[in-house]
Length: 209
Ligand SMILES: Nc1ncnc2c1ncn2[C@@H]1O[C@H](COP(=O)(O)OP(=O)(O)O)[C@@H](O)[C@H]1O
Ligand SMILES: [Mg+2]
Picture (cartoon, rainbow, N blue to C red):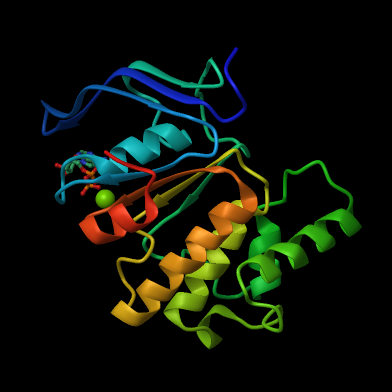
């Protein structure tokens, strides 16, 4: 029996079509990730890292091979998989609290449960006191914290991170790497981090692919 959050990628192939010509991007990728593991994926720009994450999160569904979560084929996006991108992608007209709460739109929770879990996640990423701030009032690092809280608030089994600190200055980046490590330990969920920074990959990953 697979455990909750076991990801198996088997003989994955993905190609895009560019001007009528096939562009192979991923060829025969096989990778198994255990529940609670932190895996870093490193590679040069354009090698297909974001494509791989988009496939796992279900934003892209046209592929060959298998992507299985707990033995079931991944089809479409789901609350069991969260993602953080390089840009925070917050709604500028919503507060921190409202942005995180948007992720719970389809969650099966009461209003008070939603309020409580949003508050808990704001605390988890160290932003207590900024509930009613708008994105333009936050630094880049704080905005990325909100994006992490938004991705975690649905309690996913897997958190996917696509170069989440790539746009931050070196000090903020180092600090958020420590914070991510702390959050990973606190939450005990599977994390897959895509980065082109080898040091970051080694510092955070149990395993580097
Ligand atoms: N939607 C798309 N249509 C066509 N080609 C794409 C598309 N998305 C990505 N590609 C191509 O696929 C390759 C891998 O892209 P990507 O997964 O973004 O790489 P990485 O994240 O490793 O930099 C690149 O050559 C890119 O141009
Ligand atoms: Mg990319």
